[in-house]
Length: 99
Length: 291
Image (cartoon, rainbow over the protein chains, first blue to last red):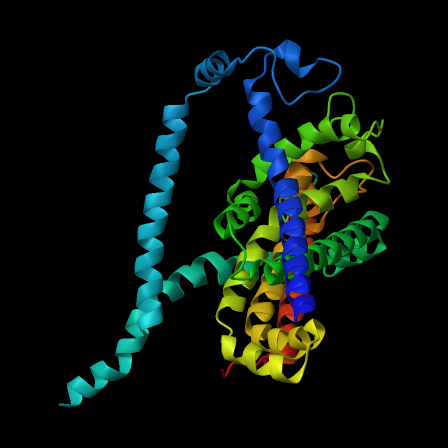
């Protein structure tokens, strides 16, 4: 009986191990991009890559992004496309499904 | 009275009409139009379409690039479908365990790549695969120029595609698993102790409707993928990562050979149609819907 409880615990631990490892593997590109977005030019090209930026440049990077492209326009376009698409799609497919 | 009967008869067609009009103008008509122009030479050198019969198809089959492109597409498709479906199933079976804490974390971590646009995923991976400053080369002390190497470029794209696709299948499998009644497993506990028997004789059969849809979507999606290739390699080096949709784009739009491009797209359409039809016919009978 104790043997069974032990093997149940062991399999749960193995379960956790596999899931956590694969989650971290999948998450890593995102973490890396977030970290890089906080770095300045010098940090990005520094020889041993590091997860911790020496100087957090979040604000200036964000400002540069906003300055370089008309984001408000882009977002307005996206919202327009999505809302028209959604309404037309819903109407058409609900009618078709009802028939 | 007669009028009411007539109305009842045409009512379903009225409801289906908007969808049908859409399908006809934006799907059926373009397909036939493509088929028609695939028999013409039409492009920069011959601005007016000239009828040449099956010449476009003959040219495609004689072209070594066309064969290379199909071999790339089949490799990519087989690897991404196998990778995303098997990994998704494996992780979903592990994740479907009520003793497990932090289910939400695992689901979010697996699924988020699906919510990223393909273009963003491509940029992220390009940055990580960058030969000098990229994360992967630095992490493993390699000096490989992944996206410009004939041996590794397709592999790199396949890995990125699996990373992007596995979460979607994971989630579908997980929801499929959660609708399997627990009594079956409890009953099985009396008979056997082997997880393999449980998996083989309960999980797999009960999951078959989910698997059916997941594989179908994965195959169709893999044949249609173009974004990663377009952004990361443009089909290079020397067509080693050129997938069929990207080749159609290169020939039909970028080189403006509309006739040849039409022939290529029609062939892709026919192959996908046959593939889907065969799959539906073969698998429909083996899927167990009744619970």
